[in-house]
Length: 223
Length: 264
Image (cartoon, rainbow over all chains, first blue to last red; front, top):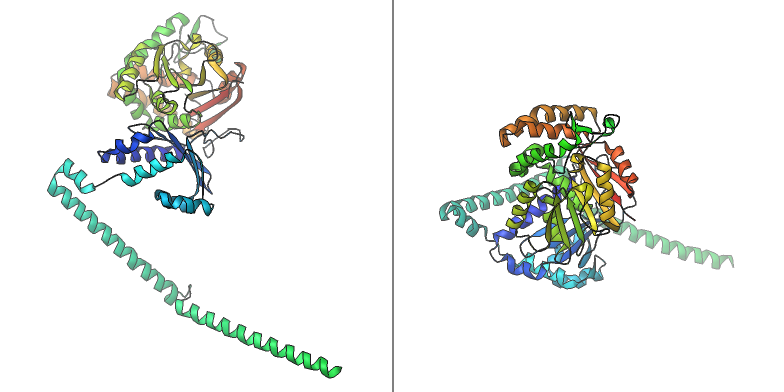
């Protein structure tokens, strides 16, 4: 089964479901209607193409013929990407794309390349930032006040507990690696080691200087 | 899982037999009779076609179709022919991609399937750039060089004379255009083939009876899949029809294959 298509299908389904949660999503989609945006992620070189209408987003993986079981396709496949706007971005910088103020910085850092109509990217950013998703309110409309409040309260408690467990786990794991197994150096040991290296270097420099002086004297005596 | 085109095919195994006989599943019938027999099958399954597709393939047909669209290279302004398009799964997506400057023609030989597709697409709000044409793939009623892309998903195996259909598609494609044929094919693993056979001939007809109250139609679908040419044979047929740069991709272990060819 083409795994990438499965993932893009799930992503498309999720994106459209999330859009429907905001009653004013069409206001944000309207400026994008009929436009398309291609997003090439580096270094994996995967291109994702988004096609917008006034009611939904379609996600394609243009001409992606690699990675399928039993593929007998020729390798020389041309790139079928033709979009109103084409962004090429480093995967690590993807999260910064939401903030349009960061665009210039990302371009200067060679993490982002934009071709085509920049307004498409700006409208997409406005769509992502503009969605007002109050989950409690959405649930309230579907199941009522009290159950919605209970579910959200429980969910919040679960998230907080998960954060606490993760924090606790990080500390325990860190102590086990440093103190018990001694696989990782502690910050104090690292600082001591750095100081010792600095001292050694200082003494080496002093010794080198003294040797240089002695060598000079020796040469002067020979003359 | 079989979008409709007319009669079943004369496979390579059958060419040595009487020229007026052809396959209808595993049975031999007159060529004249086939079109109406296949039409009956699809009239019978049309109403519950989408539900059955999801049940039979566990929803995987959506992934296969998505892959086909990804490989189509469709873009704004393109003119696409969704041949044997049945209930319009590909058409819906193409319609949004090509936009108002392009067009999608949903064509099927079976009016029942076309009607179901038309209702479905209208319910989705897709009306502006879609045309509906009842047509036989062997004699397409379109001018030469009319389409940028032609797709045929789960339809070719039902065509009586595949070589005629491929020639007809070649004629209506623009130079530079491409054909994508998504069709059941031959599994690449013998283990998978045995599991697939058991599923197709024992479970599938019973599911057809349970969901659509139509065991015979789904038995025919399973049989017609076995009579369809394998991957290499179909690729050769495309080359014989004039397509260049032909290739295919096996999906889900070869249960389905996507063939692709270009007209230059």
